[in-house]
Structures are given as structure tokens and as C-alpha cells.
Image 1 (spheres, rainbow, N blue to C red):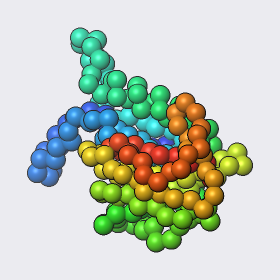
Image 2: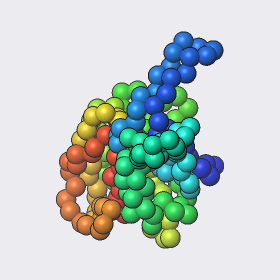
Image 3: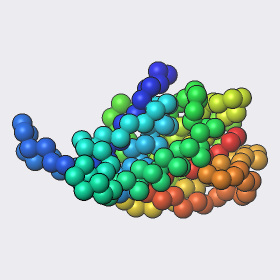
Length: 187
């Protein structure tokens, strides 16, 4: 699977009027930025560029724009997961949900022998199987950028959940996933 070198995320509200009818891109929320950034990483991007026309600081007043703290928070989350994403090889990406984006693969089988089941409420999930430094990771992202979803997942054997500050083993059955956020397991 070819992997993108760089991913992009919109970090500024704007309206495009020409040549089409008004297209409105709202001020991004934490869920919007997470959905854009983590989906890029789940597909293998190795760098993220934020698109915002003028930067994250107002050039006249030198005040931080609304997305500044959100981008800072998401960058901190990316850094915490660098052992998973930096230099990784994506083995496959699938989508769940009632409808899936065009030109994507629907998750119709479990992509790894340790996986028993996977269901995501709401809009569904992006599911990525990743290899990095001899480990296999499963990353599951909430495709909804506005509403929390519930991930129901089970495994045949022990797995570790990767959190920004630690790994932990637990009986994973139902996990609340914030809008656009990602849940990662080391299989």
C-alpha cells in the first residue's frame, strides 16, 4: 500500500465563493483537527502540515488564534504516539459504519488473528493495522468529529492499550472515544 509522505489539516475557518456557491469551512474544533490529523497518520503520513492562510497568531495583534491551543494539544498527542506512527508501515486501512467513503475498503473481516470483534457506534471508524519496530498496532479512530462514539472490541488473547503516557492491559470491551480521537492497541 503506498503511503502519503505528508498529511494536511485545516486549522482556520474560511468561505470559498468563486467559482462555486459558498462553501463554508467552520472554525475547527478539537474533534475536527483530530479527525484530520489522525486519519492522515492512520494512512501512513509521516508529517502534518496545518493549512490556515496566516498562521496561528494574528500578524497585527500578535494574539493566538482560536486553533492555536487545539493544534498545540493535538501535536502533543501525536508526539506521545510517535513510537507507533514515526517510521511505521501501514499494513491495511478499513472503514466501518453504515456508509463508507468512496474508494475505501469496508471492514468485512478482522484484520488480525488476535481480534475477535470490533464495532463502533455512530458514524463508524477508521481501522488501521500498523507495523513499527517489530510490533503490530491496531489503531481505531472515531470518524465522527462532533459526537463521542463507543468502541466495542474484543480479542482472543492479551493486548496492550497504548495511552499517551503509558501502556496498560485491561479487559477491553467498551471504550468511549471522543470526537475524531484514536484508540491504539499493541497486539
